[in-house]
Length: 52
Ligand SMILES: [Zn+2]
Image: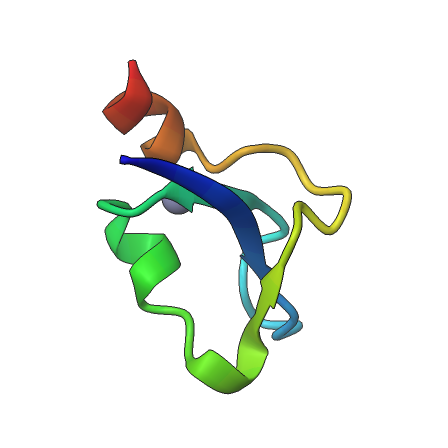
């Protein structure tokens, strides 16, 4: 399901944003690194696949 974009502020993570609630990579982001918005990053490839 599509939702408000979020991204990780952790420097080790890929510089992408997520907008699919079913994205495992996006869901693996810890709460303290999770930030609302795209962060100016492109959309995660997994989110793209899920949303078609
Ligand atoms: Zn994603």
